[in-house]
Length: 436
Image 1 (cartoon, helix red, strand yellow):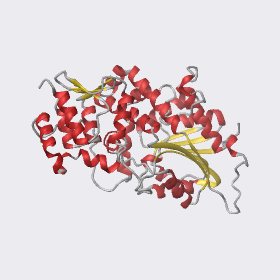
Image 2: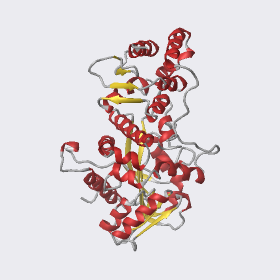
Image 3: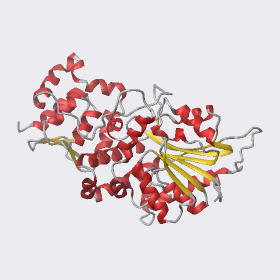
Image 4: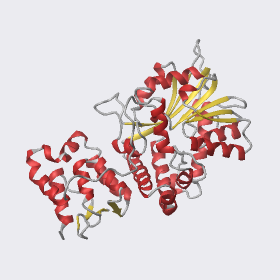
């Protein structure tokens, strides 16, 4: 089959009803498509069987993780061009890739099947999560989900995140990526400092850091603001790493790191709570409980800073959304909600929402830096985990960067107060200065 690429391009365009925006290079060396476009490399026909078995995002993801497809050219450009008809055309696009359901498409589908080769499709890559059945977001299931994502290895995360070891959106200056002197570490420091200022932290105040990661927020709050910090995480690898950093900085008298579910924290009240990139793990069935628990742990007048990724509301506005690739390979059981639903749930729990700041473009820049770190240290990253796992993270972070750039998802810092009876929030009249 010396013309596999041309045959695939023709069939794909017939089935999808749109011209392919990328170039195809097939396993037989043939190429087809726009000459100036990034090239999708199909290394063997197993990738096609995956697409037939799981049309759309999951088939592509499994083939990518298995190394059966690759990219020649700019990965971001390829993902940006694919986004327009795989992820952003709603049910219409999904209906078109379910090949055998439309009688008009059956002839083309049979031709595609002949090219793909014999069934059944290959088994999913080993990196795909094997989750237990039963109710979502039990303590045991959440702990397993967190372990799948965060216990990949601290060495791996050091390569990707850099010295800051902060795994959430950084806060860039106006020059953004154009100022070479302003590094990822600078942007992460500024993000942590912004959160401390929004929380109004002062010497000796108690801060609860929910989902404390590798301890970066706890360290910054204790070192720069004199706070007494309790950090909780479900990842033992994170906790071990954070405790080592804290001991090296001589802050063990100010910071305690626990391997503990936030639902089991009982030693309130706290003056302030930070939740940075953690609430996406909570899930729709538990989000009101999450809000209630944090409200109960704050003193009257205490502040919550909830830093959380949000999706754009669509026809199913008000509902949470689970991305199939991210659910299977990255964040098992993770869910995204529209910003409005999150704010409403926090207020239903008793919080007064005082400020919402969207920092969507900041996350796109952050992710591009993480991908750059991963690509720069690719061989070491593969050795520290697995080729498939490294490919998962490269695709996940690059695709997420494109999603933020295209406004498919956003990220917001919600500052909320447990306003006491009488209505005095304790907030400054011109709060946006944040103490600067």
